[in-house]
Image (tube, rainbow, N blue to C red; front, side):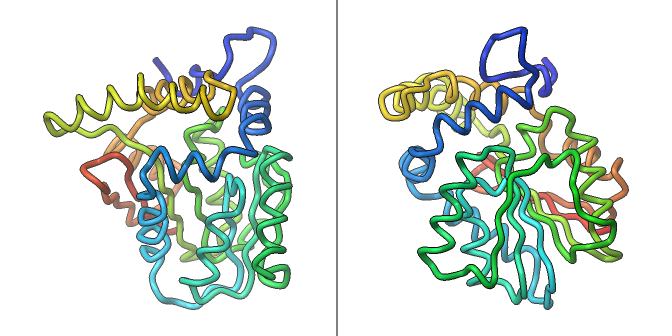
Length: 244
């Protein structure tokens, strides 16, 4: 089962990109609270570690792909030495909520959000010093094309950080993880977000998505060097780092 064949809805009439956009528009109002609830708040720790993996250098411009409701730009502003962060997401509903969050924290001068396609970036080449993506590349219709685009818009020595779900390999945690993701998480999602298919898709997309060395190899194919990965919380998710 290839990851790009896994879609939120079974419709034959819409491609993955269209379906993912529709799904995130539907669950946008519940997205933040569900993230905290379903991960027991651990997702915040994961994000902090992921941002810290970029190091302490000064960044002029950072691109956050699949920015969602702008959790990462808000946290990056606190933890990175960065002048400006551009957050991009394919879902207008998520971006709309993200803009409200940026206004709430009075970060309009530091963060700008926009609706856009990660596989067809509007930015000129060699534009950013770093690019990040948290729990987003799994939703790309064409993973390699998306990574190629990220590589293109990074300047020389630009840093890549991807935070993505992965599959635990240690017994019995692997089995517990599968039960939680396959049965418990979709039930909670159905009761709270009114879109159970979104959380069924989450399980299926994680199962089909490449992780660890397989994902590192795909990143290398786009041209990135010094690619490494760091599993977190027994492998529930993994940080991938690379450089242009």
